[in-house]
Length: 163
Ligand code: OFO
Image 1 (tube, protein in one colour):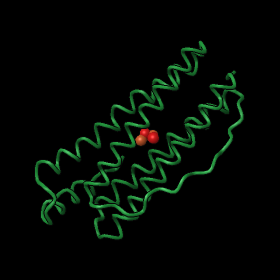
Image 2 (tube, protein in one colour):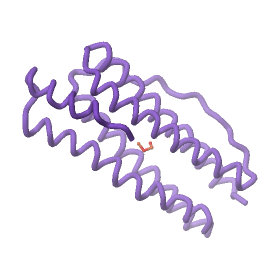
Image 3 (spheres, rainbow, N blue to C red):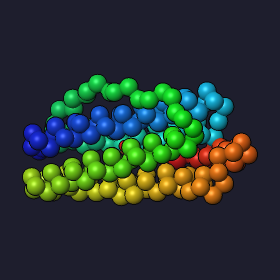
């Protein structure tokens, strides 16, 4: 049984996760457009992960007899200054999501909602990985730069991402 505040906050997080999916789908589309298939693959895998995040919360709300209420998804950016800019924006967005998850945990604790608190722990751990993945790619850019050759090398590595 979810309290009203918790339910509303979880519904908002379904929306945040759907926006994350939309954002990375937009980055995938942009990468395809500029001819970077590996980047396009990486962001499409990320899109799929975000849909899994959204559905996990969707299913949890249902399992607690709450009503899922879908909200409008904001338009994501469609132009990016460079491939590195996409990863800068990705990391920035993931930091925002980490804060959202932490706020949800705070609320669950405030409300003494132990079930939701336990449910959210998966997301707490997931956010460590999400930020680490972005930092890893940003570090590669720092190492090899953004020249044509460096870009193609990173593109080849990002093409290998499967999950
Ligand atoms: Fe990218 O972790 Fe969900 O939003």
